[in-house]
Structure formats: structure tokens, C-alpha cells
Length: 507
Image (cartoon, rainbow, N blue to C red; front, side):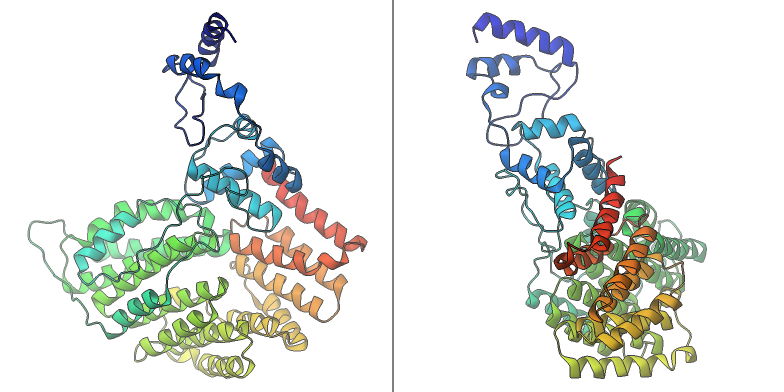
């Protein structure tokens, strides 16, 4: 292209594109400035040979999209939806996707979201580098393992944490050494309560009305999480916590109000951790759990702290860290001693059983399940906090069904899973979806392929409104288990049902 041709092209492009994004820098990322902001960029590009004409198509991305059977519009929609689940806004369109297929540069966070979206569609993990976006994988976020000694440091860390939008950390993205986790747990176990600095002079005065509002919010978002998945409420709750809750912790209050206030704040942190876990941001979830744990230390709330440890055990087991999961569950049992109610002890023991079952320790899992059953028999003898309301008989039975499934005990798995499905309240829609998928897997273990497909199909139908990465994984696990039956029409029909459910994201 001659210089005069280049200048003509430059003028036409600048006048027609307006503020559309253009020109990616070779070999890296770009902020993609609007063409109207600087046409000189295009002139420079012409003199260098015009990247848009010289860059190669991204054959890897094209191949992965073909394998996933996803269109430009479909991938763009999946990326926007995934970003929204994580509390972020993404302006990706089918035009953006085509530019990336043509070899244009891409922002690291956008590349990571694309990789996660395609991973979900393909039912296996692919990275941005796998997609031909070399150098675009952002460094894995290493959650700060330190357990702050000073309360001021803990509050400062929380302030920073609430500014962090859920990113692209995958199920393999939680990189925290056992020593770091053990150190944090030990610090909590042996800590002395900070105590409340009541009646700080010259600051805003907080009363029980504000505390009640925070507890109401915690309960509301927890119910939303159970009903629709973590993706529906995480962003709103994070905003509420940052702007309405954290400022109150540094305000003035009586000792009674202060104790209630820190307890309510810890509950919010726990729900934030759980919702981040459910949408697949495990590093962020871990940090919220540890922050909530630190808040419980202020007021010596061993029950809530132990509950958070049990949540961390649940997450560790999900990620396949069975030894850590069992240890965290035992830490919950020991750390909550003296304050934990029988209902709490039952769920702590059930989480230990889940970890041991996943590790194929039948004897240990049986003992832990017996402990959980024994504790739950006394569940009505003590006053439980509202955040333990979900721990009913169906919840314990559901945990046992997971245990027997993992232990490959067909009869027990089928019996407990069927009971869990029958008894789970509809307000716990996500839990019901999990239990249905476990029932389907149990039916498969018992050789009932037709029943398994019917049950899994119902779970998919009823779970379409869930914004839960965990539910998606249950479905994907089941799909892998039936992958050897592709010649059976009913299996093909189920595969098509799942594909259609996912295709709705593309519309």
C-alpha cells in the first residue's frame, strides 16, 4: 500500500468508525483507543505495514469455537453473562469476537473470561494460552494468607477486598499452601478476643436498628443464594457491605451493640465468601472466609467462626483437597466446642464425612456420619442462629447421599439421594438441583440408565435459572459418566437437552 493510499484509508476509517475501537498492538494487549481520539495511530500503522492486514488469524481460537459449536454471538453472550455473574460489566459483541478470531489483541481479564466461558461449554479446562492468546493469562491471584494480628489491619484488608470484582479464578486457581491455611486456623483457635472499643468519641453513633438491618440483609442474600445461585446477589451484597457495613465498624457504639454489629458483619463476609465460591472464584471466596473468621475473633463468636471453617472445608473438598477439607472440618468441631449447638456440630461432622468419603476412607467416613447423625438427633434442644436454619434433616441426608456416591455404595447412595430429593424444601432450589444430580448418579451406579437420564433431565429443566458454577459442574460430571452410552437415543436426547439449555445463553 502506498503512502497516499494509506492516508486515504486513514481518512475514511476515521470518519466512519467514530468512537469504535481499533488497532491492536502486535504481541501484547491494548486499551484499544477510539479511532476518533487519534488517527495518527492509524498513520503509524500504515507506515509499519498495517497490522490489520499483516496479522495472522487465530487458528486456535477458531478451532476451539468450532469444537464448542459456539457462534461469535453465542460466545459474546456467554462472556457477558459470565462477567455479570462475577459482578463485572463486559461490552463484548460478536464484532469483538470476530476481531479476536482475526488475531487482534485482547485485554488479559477479557481473555480469561473467554477461556472460562469456553471451558464451561467444552466441559474441560482451557486457558487463554490454549486459545492462542499467548501471554494473556493474568497471574493467578494468590489470596493473602496472613491472618491479621491487629484489627485495624483486618479492616483495611476488608476494605481492599470489597473493591475487588470477582475475576477469572477457576477451580484450579486457588493456590494456598497447607501451611498458610494451618497458620490462619491456628491463629484463630488460640486467639484472645480483641474486645469492643465502645463509645468512640466524635464518631457516628450506631444502634441496634442498624444491626438488625444488616442481619436482615445477610438472611435475604443467603436465601437469594440458595434459590438462584451465587451469581444473582454477589455484586449487590459486596456494594452493600462496603458502603453500609464496613463504615459502621469504625463508628461509635455501646459494647452490646458492638458485639452484635461485628457478628452481623462476619455473617455478611461469610455469605460473600459462599457466593464467590458458588460462582467459581475460589481465591476470592477463601479471602472472604478468612476475613469473616477474623471478625468473629473480635467478639469471641466461636460458633460463627467454626461455621466459616466448615464452609472452608466444603470448598476444599469441592476442589479435591481432601486432607485439608477433613482437617478444617475437625478444626470446626474443636474450635466451636462450648458454643456450637448440636445442629452446628452435625453439619461440621457431615463435612468431615464428605472429605473422608472423597478420600475413599470408608471407616472414617462411617464414623463421621454416625457422629453427624447422633448430633442431629439433639438438634432441637438448643437455640440456633438463623444462619443455621438450612441445616435440616434433608440437608444431612443430602450430605450422606454425596458420601455414599463417592464411596461407590450403590444401594445406600440411591436410598439417601431419593430421600434428600423428596424432603428438600423448594426454597433451597440449588440444593435440590444438587440432590437430583446425585440421585441420577446413584441410579447410574445401580444400572438404571433410563431413570438416571430422567432424573438428570428434570434437574436441568428446574436448574436453568441457577447462576451457579457448582451446579454446572454436577451436570458436566454426569455427562462424563454417560459418555460411554452415546449410541443410545435417550443419552443423545439428554445431551441435546443440555445443549439447548446452554444455547439459551446465546440468545
